[in-house]
Image (tube, rainbow, N blue to C red; front, side, top):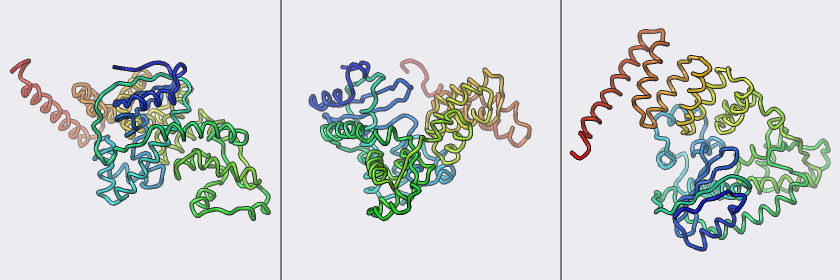
Length: 369
């Protein structure tokens, strides 16, 4: 039986309480008013996993400085399926992180995701009861009651922090009073966080590197109170439609942020082919293949032909299992290529896809054979 409705009528904290009390197992799908989507997996009332569309495990590790954008693109992007479990196994196999380190990293990110979901005031949710099948590497057992208690506490305390930190997009910087530095008494990790306070990184940027946005905001709030740090509105907020901001995020491998900026930018300049290339690549890198196809269609409507976009559009159709569409796009790409060598590669790829399609049709045979 499905439970669904607008968040404005049943907030997510109350909904989590209901699912916990009734020991429900299934998937809670949530969509915000700005089209952001999240999934929370429950087993017998406990949270076992959670994710937000467009923010996959590779992206989280890039933000945390565990891998580089270049490493992801060269070693993983086209080799490992767009699947967090497969990528998690590869991380352990390549000794990027131990299994215990990875699980600890993931659990902290899941908890942080839940706390942020609790702040959503508008949108729509739908809970579907089903058995949960997750590999033990990415499956957890997080008590929902604990999440609710901590989430409620954070919401209350955020109201106090908001007097000096209105949101996590504010950019802290060191004050001009050197005498105040004598008041600092920090732990090693807090010194690392302090080193990122440079007038460029927002609180959100720092949290993506060191985790737990709330705790970092509390630390910086204390520094503001002591007069060691001051805050100013993020330049990102004031330049929300800036192509340069989007490119900065893209170059750093922060594809989810790049997507948000490029969506706004393309409303102003819908004929910028470089912006389309970046957003399509970003969607592909975060496994949003349907979005790749959607934005490639917008490029066609603007009557712009681009080999780069056609290449990723075809691959996205292939990833979605839409072989005919993939072949159509490859044929269209063939006409744009200028060298016989590249055209030959396309011909071979088309032949392989057509042969695969034919073999599957022969294998199926008919309705009941």
